[in-house]
Structure formats: structure tokens, C-alpha cells
Image (tube, rainbow, N blue to C red; front, top):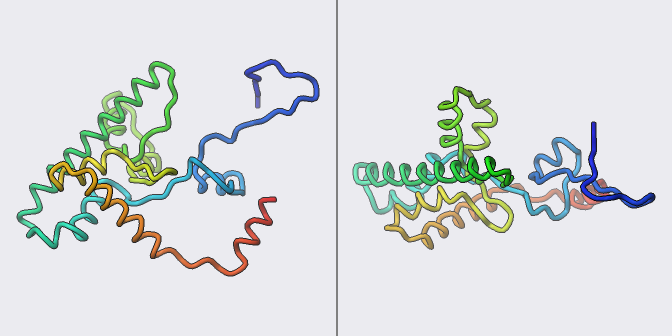
Length: 192
């Protein structure tokens, strides 16, 4: 392993090594600990854009639309979301070409996969699965693709789209297991 300094170092000066911008799952899996406050943590809301739209129909659309009425509307919403995924992938590619490393937006499997296939590369299945996920990240940000798809279902109303995402977050939080008494103390003690 080679570590290079980005500035001059004085004898006795403290050296810091970054673990990188990782989710809490990555920290726990690879390093055995979880930071107390992690601005790069994330939570999976849906496995992919299609699952997000299926969820949306079951919770919002089915009350107002028959399956026959919903199909063309949801197909158009999927196309809008996929177009956003492709635009995000192109922005990342352009930024990478200019040497600007940006964290990839969530839910980009299809656009990434199409780009790799056009270059003759096949994406590893686990990477494709992770890129396909629609996630909420620290600060409540979600993929623009899901917002665009949900807004397309509401006549362009992004507030309604954000409300739907908030409903999904609340739904997931309600289904989480209750904390085990004393587990937080034990976890905190392990970190120190």
C-alpha cells in the first residue's frame, strides 16, 4: 500500500486517512464499525424504478384509475424516469472525463448498463443491482428519476412526487423493528 501526502508534513504531525464516502452498511461490512453521524448514509426505498412505479400505483393510482387507464400513464412515467436516469449518467460520464469525481446519483442501472454495453462491457450483476436501486441519502435527497416519474403521474407536480416519496419513507420507518433494549448502549460502547 502506498500513501501519498497532498501537503508537506512536519515531524510529529498527525496524519489522517479517509475511509471514503461510504454508507453505514459499507462501513460495518468492511471496517466493523458505523460512524455516529454519516453524511453519506443511504436507505433503499425501492429496488428499481419499475418497483417504485408499481408501489405508486398500489398506493395512489389504483384509487383513481383502472388498470387499463393506468397502463399508458405509468408507461409514460417510466419513460420519463428512464430519460432522467440517462441524463444523470451522461452528466457523470462528462464529469469523469473532466476529472471531476462526483458521487453517482441513485437508481442509474439502466443508463449505466446501456453505456457499458455500447462500449462492449458487461456490468457485474451486483453493481447493476446497486445502481438500479432508488435510495434516499442523507439530507433527504432521492434520485431525480423517481421524482420526475412520479411528477409525470401528477401532471408535473413535483410537490406531489415528493409527498409520495415521503409516504414511502414513513412506510419503511413504521415497518422497522423496534430497538432491542440496551443494544444502543452496547453499539456505542463498541465504537469507543
